[in-house]
Image 1 (cartoon, rainbow, N blue to C red):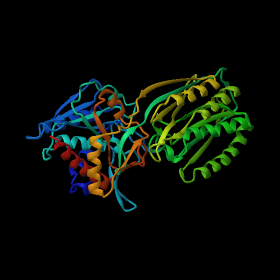
Image 2: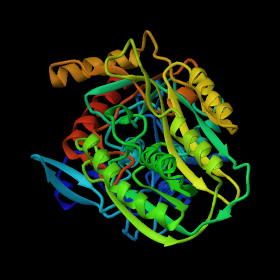
Image 3: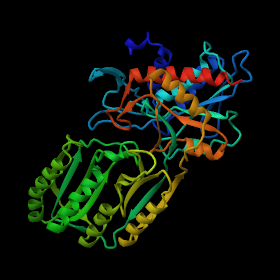
Image 4: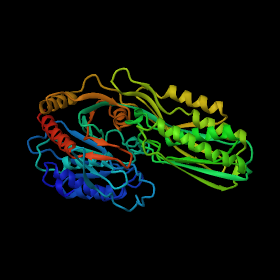
Length: 486
């Protein structure tokens, strides 16, 4: 990071580096929250933590700007914790290893075989910089830094009414520097419980098939790229082998986060020695076809097969039914939006599957810019057809685009003056906290912007250095413009 200390946003990079040195996977934000609170206090800002662990930082207006509108910056402290297979990173104690890389002539900040956490560490760094920088002229400022955004937005849901005084808010959790977001998808979790009807029986031999190297990605922003889902691929492979060789299912496991397209999965099948031998040869044929199909989106798919002793396996009937259910769970893009170009309306991501002692559990994240009700009906039909159960939880509201936003108009003008064109105004097919906050503060004027982040929720995540400079400069101008509305 030594090459960034002379940039105009050097303070932002310093804060991002400090934040990255503190483990902050979802559910483990206490240490970073403590550091932020102490830093804010040293810089003369007031900071309180609510009952959930969210931080609300307030900064007094610059003398003479007391009557300017109060402005709130908002970001989330937690990050998705993913690492490459075989990499030994402890997200409860190890710092994120930052490095600078030049890729196709552009400078990026990257991590080492883990997620970078620029989503949304860079948003936290910017928000913290603005409320603690004494060189800027501004009206009253607030920063709302939340916990658990990546796990069902648990933090923002607990922000109480009346906590914030601002009527304008800038969410710094978008990932394209030429866009401004004025709406976002709502969502819900769908959890399938797949239970066998007969007891397991011992078999002669087994075959473990491990799939890895899938590209993965953000299940909202990158769901329309046509990338393979490792869980669905494993289930499709298993279905082929079960149908062709009468093999039985022992287990199927994969994915770690419902909001990330899974990059690996494994399935264990069992049967007679002869059936397993024939199935081994078939696996190579199926995998070759899979690699050809996804050669552009997932060029690094790898498969390892391991022959093993006999295991307790489900009955053939249960195996066929459960695998069919997994294959039938809607996944990927369901429909596209009519208003915003190249924007997904409704999607589903089968992000986690795990085999327990007496059931298999599969978790999907449903997203929609309008309503997830039709998708829920589809999920219920799948469950009913396969004598299974599906339960929905963690619903959060969509953020409906506002027909008029003074904050948007100010930002559009500032952007156009600097870039000789207007930013793309769109809605995001991903969950941002604005929709939930808008329900609590219906009069609040909200936009979402941010620097360019590529590969969020994957180990290829990288943050554009020039993009941070661009957004930081635009935000400084916007802050000044808002402050002049006295």
